[in-house]
Length: 632
Image (cartoon, rainbow, N blue to C red):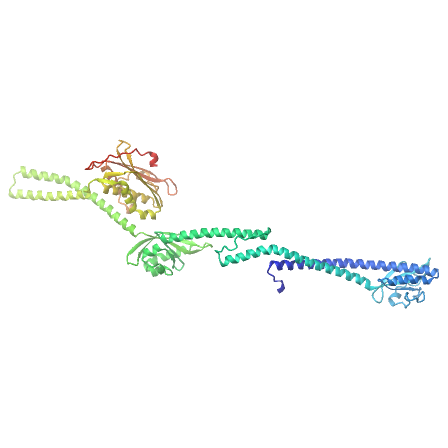
């Protein structure tokens, strides 16, 4: 039904109340009309029965007393009643009992009235009520004188009387129904206003938020109602306030993320299912020498080439199919300048709300400089190993050379030689001198010719940390530095630089999964003999070393780094510390990878004048011994 498709609460309440009131009024009216109609019929029957009995009684007295004129007032009174149509007096055969007086009906009996006359030998015991030929109610009663039946009294009901009563009852029911409908409309209007007003305010506010999510016009909503609709409006105010707080926090988070993506020294990229770049940061674009706008909408095959795409695309497809993230992918990419750069790529899925992989994120770390530094360091270690080997060989060669030289000298001075023998001996002496010079140069190559000088230990440590700053950032290592005042030391600065470089490099290798690196340099005293000097601590929270490894770390060529190590770093470090008459102490705790509390501590002490006194007068420097709490 088209008219029933209402939308507003006001119309729904109004129509609902009206329908309910109509149904109630109709049902109640029908029930009342039925009940009252029966009661009206019953009253009418009792009334006509009383009237006919009264007429029969009065007729008996009038006939017995032969005073027929006494019936006239009675007949007039009955006819004057709105409920009586006519009265009639007849003998036993239906003929008029009295002459026509103008108030008593004397017309012949109708067929319905004749059927009410009793058969011969029978008499009416009580008034009989029936429907006459006109369909109206009529009553007949016997007129008796003692036991003798004289005739019959007839009273016909006026039908308009009962109809007027029924019509009056219907009018009252209709008026009550109309008043009920009006009351329902008024109640529904008042009730709908208390409900729809706050709802309308909430609806208008919602529309404003849809048009402008940042708007603050009309908020918070002012609601006077205290019903459920008012509580809904108050809840809407709280919702808007919560949304504003969440939007503010989300904007801050997005700003932080955008700042991180834009300025982080790591490349970030996001790719879709077709392998197209949908977002990259400035660091990646600058590092590859490609304009930022050229990345968007292009694939790795279009930007990097076929070889790199064949390596990258299968990994992307696996992650989109639900595989685990890839964190060991390395690419060699030719940048916009034609230089080949090395990138370490970590791929991870970016899922939507339905836990479906929507994009793949790529964290790309430029390892070109690190690889170059590692190659340089590796070559340096190889050169150091070669230098150690050459020095060892030169040292071993130098001793027999001296013996051979002495033997040649004895041969020339003590054994008489002819001219050729003497010439051959001189030639041998000359060649041995050349070999000895070569061995001495080899030893000088291993033993630097730099002289000791006053150097600041803190500056040397900072320079080493600066060298490894890129790796420290990549590994997410937290560096804690603590330098005391006046940590100058008369030393071989180049040798100390090599010592600290070896220790810090090893610490970073142990912190491959992140952690903390602590570097300290303070004035102190030797704990054994009280000499003044500088104490240096290099500690890490890395994987630590088991006991069997810690016992062999200062052995030459012992390494746990397999293909990347030579096993000479700590051996050289120990040798340099000995040359400075210092001490080196190692403490390490080895724990499983998932446990906490592992790490290694290298503690070095360098006395002030371990490599000799400076040429100029130097001010003696001393400090209180470093306590165990300071080293903790």
